[in-house]
Amino acid sequence: MEERLWNKEYLKVMTSNFLLFFAFYLLTPLLPIYLNEQFDANKDIIGLALSGYVVATLLIRPFSGFIVDSFNRKKVLTICFFAFFICFAGYIGAGTLLMFAIVRTMHGIPFGATTVANSTVAIDVLPSSRRNEGVGYYGLSNNLAMAIAPSAGIYIYGASGNFTLLFWISLILALVGFYVTTRVRLPERMTVPDKPKVSLDHFFLGRAWLMAVNISLFGLCWGIMGNYVAIYGREALGITDGTGIFFALLSAGLILSRIFGAKRLRRGLITESCTAGVLLSTAGYVLFAGAWGQWSFYLSALLVGLGNGRMYPAFLNMFLNVARHDQRGTANSSILISWDLGMGFGILLGGAIAEYAGYAAAFGIVALSQALGAALFILATRKFYLRRALTVRPE
Image (cartoon, rainbow, N blue to C red; front, side, top):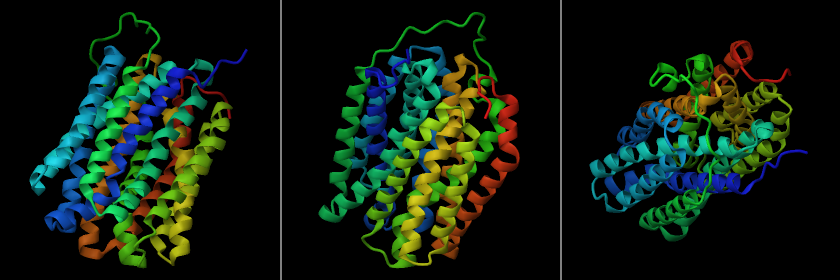
């Protein structure tokens, strides 16, 4: 008899993950506008202020994996989620650019730790026979939130013109997410005999180093696009009210790709799914950078959504498949470190290039990075993974 995928605990973890990312990304595309209007910050300063959370996230990720693998995951998750929730109050009280930058940077610590803990808990509550498939569906919760939340934020701001309202909404959503995590029940964990107390592999999965480099290139693309798409659309194409449509199409692509791609992951077609994803994303980013008109702007959103919805869960399964069962937290933290490293560099690079060469040049870098990442995966990373996988079915 087939094990049940959609059990209550899995649904709770997916819900809390969705709320975590929705609360965070509700603000993301509007923060450059907020910093410019509220504090008169230029593009360089905006990039610096917004990249601080990525630096903090990167610093905490390796320790998060070790802590999640070594201590009670339920307690770790609830503590981290509570700290994540409280940080939203800081945005409301930040009256200067410096204070805002400090709050944003500090927010990266619980954000980084909570995402590692939550995704590891999701793996724990999944039946082992349906783990590949479940990982694919789980990622839908955060990818969907990352696609829908910016649209919702833009709509709310367009209707109210009130940034404080957005901060309050994020605070309340994070509180609900925290409550959901307190209701999750986890199975008993098996202890690992003779497990070393501390080793390098508990902080970063060295066996996955090339996969980490590869996904960093894709994270760079998402970092620039996600943070500067509203300004880019306005300056390059004169689109003042269509960013919400962009994220809606991105969301549609993610949903469709996750739903239909999960079956391929269940069959073990991991690298095949990833290849299709990186090629679709490449086509999308090239259209986005080309700025040939509104049609290319909107079509690019759909293609990037379809591509990322295939690519990211495949990469996550690859990280998990090269890790031992007692390294799930490390595998999760490693892929997130790699993604965030690329995304943080992208935010900084995008702001700097936009300041001196314009947003068109910044998004040209996006298309180039995505193309390089696609070539690297097809030519090298796929074979690298298949040589190192500990649990993988033949494709």
